[in-house]
Image (cartoon, rainbow, N blue to C red; front, side, top):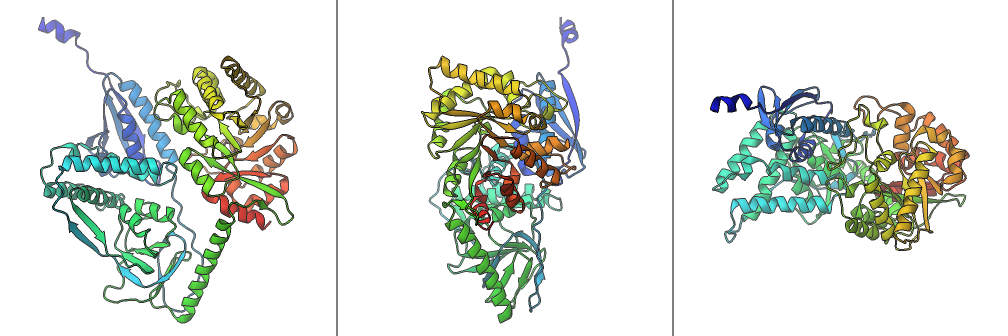
Length: 616
């Protein structure tokens, strides 16, 4: 009998794929954390084989310790019931991560001449600061009254990071907190850790693995996590910071320390080591703190009462002359004046010098970015992306209604785009047929017409949420009139079936596919409005995928400008631009001269775009 059982027993399914790191940033913490999140969804044993090591694809620290850089290859191995499905999906997802992980551009440094000798470094975040130099100092403070286990302290830290992620979801730095949270999901932190000394040793071992690798900048994340956990155990590291303006000199900073210094009168930061891609650098940029990396030790024994950090030019002047100080302070004042001027007028209309009114709208992704847009002075919402509600799990009808209504109530003018899934965006709970070129396949409105039940439910949620308030519904990736007619017909059916009045809802399309340009007169008779998505339009005009790691297109190519001229000259319906091009200051005048009066940009750009318009 045992012999027969052995004969009948089948070997578990095993699938392998060889994948290549194509991002210039390597396979670093943020994409690793996202990848591991996807691995958890499958019933399979999944590992990564590289550099003569095989590690679990569920363990962020172990993958990070492989230090996989651009050009490196690894084998993705899946064993089990869902081996084929998981390997295919994860391979596609990894390639998508690589495409999305764009190179962080080095800030362009302007030429500047100071009288005194300067130390030239690499700018992280632009700006100018003049203040005494303060060296980094921290003190350990113990609270012996804390009585919680290390396991509970780790759990509290994970919850803390999750809350930070949720709070900052619409910002670039949100993924930092999610990535750090995933580090703590590793087996090494889930075991029974008996003492603080053992916890510190675990962190020391993980830090040691990253030394002398491209990812040594991630050491700061481990140190940061260690401090967060220790703080819950009653051991807190406190920075000694002055309450008067200062420039901080540090060997390196932890991400959590950046948040601390941002609440003080900091004038600038000088790091003696680090990289522009580190989480610390990302946070310094997001908080607009003038900062420079110099990659060496300076002023070991001296005290400097007034130094200059000019992150616009990359100069540090430790002993400036009076002339140098005047020059730096003038630059500082000019920067502040420009920022304050545009920000103080952010709620005012944007009119050219000839009195032409231009509406500056916001591109948003969720309720937090909608609130930010309101605070930044947006005249309305030019593009409400709805994918954020659907990415992890299918939202209920009530949840959609609640979120849409909350956003609609903030503005009198809202354009909401129905789901734009496909291409580089997928849903884990819907099995989209595998496509050799998804950017030319089941994408945008094609996906919605394919998944009609999901489409109908989204439309119903929008109708219920609009509460009689005028709104615009925009269909993405329309390529021919039939698609628009079908989409609008479904919308009308949904309204009729649910007895909802949609007489004050307008229906329009995104102009992203070149075929629409050739049929503008036809579309002009049927749609209520147009919105040009310049990112995808550029992609399809040049047949270059916009996330391609090698091929690039000039965003302000004369070909793009010519296409925009053709569009505006052949439409009579309201039209806006909601792609990246709308926020490029070099072409705003040209767009306005063509006749465009509605520009939709990211919220942070609104004050400066409005000010630019006022100078035209």
